[in-house]
Image (tube, rainbow, N blue to C red; front, side):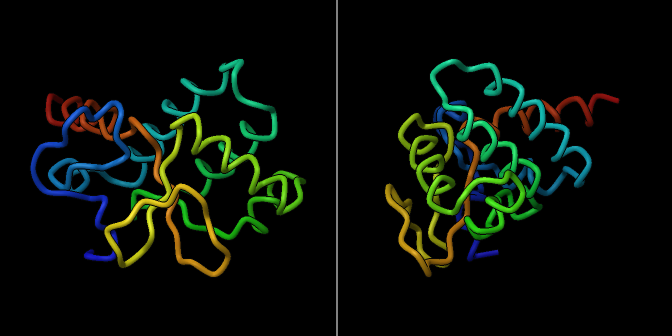
Length: 144
């Protein structure tokens, strides 16, 4: 789990503006609950008028491929195949999502966030604000 350093023990400051996830929440949720929260998160961004259509398509692909690593880590070529976009367009869309603070990109194995992505770097795309939705999902689960 050390490669997935964005899953952290303890409280996370300003969870709605962070892409970090509390381990105490992550350990309680199953895949179905995770995906339910991810799609709720996606719908919060789908109607934004400040994002390009290509960015929304890439965001859809990222959400579709989101895993229990609390990240999506496919190659841009793969996201391109999913959406019909070129790798270059996917790269521009990812950069737009980074600039708008919709996603963060974490470098695997190093406690480092990337502002620009270099080819060949093992990276994970994290969703900003998802941690607070996951915490809500965990509370609902515990309440039933």
